[in-house]
Image (cartoon, rainbow, N blue to C red; front, side, top):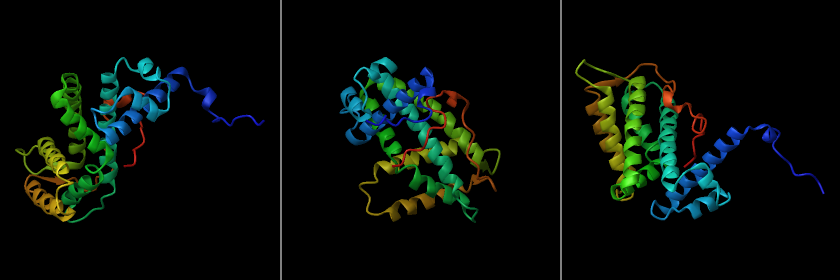
Length: 234
């Protein structure tokens, strides 16, 4: 009988690396369950089945289901940030780059698995005190993350204009629109209102000329689990 094939570096991984790999595996399985079954129906049993790990794995790496859900929610923010950066990077220079960035963000960020799951968690948190606490902390962190990206890509037209606040409003607008996506008759409806919003934004801010690089990684991303996590395909 032939020997089983192993990855050439599998035996070289440290205990910390193996632990982080398992944590990420559990987090990704949690996100998949949230996307397919919703928050209320996401159980440890389903997560274990999806991750194809032992029943003791979640308990070993996370003190509770709430801690696992919180880690999954944090992962969502990071994945969405990465998606946003790659989406904007793909936008060429044009006469209306601000509008193009808003449009690509709508199509490539707010129609993804990550966005759907984040909405699910936000709605569920209205009836779950512990989830509310986790999502409140995450919202505060997410606001700072969005602010970093906003000032990287955009600049105000006057001293009275605040790019961070304008992009927070934009995020709220797009998130609210995404909740109606399954009810609206055609993508052209969204494109019309996003065009209108872009024209309003253009009175107060503009895309920084020539900036196509990814936004800087926030300092708190230095944990092994989440750093350089690949973008999940929706």
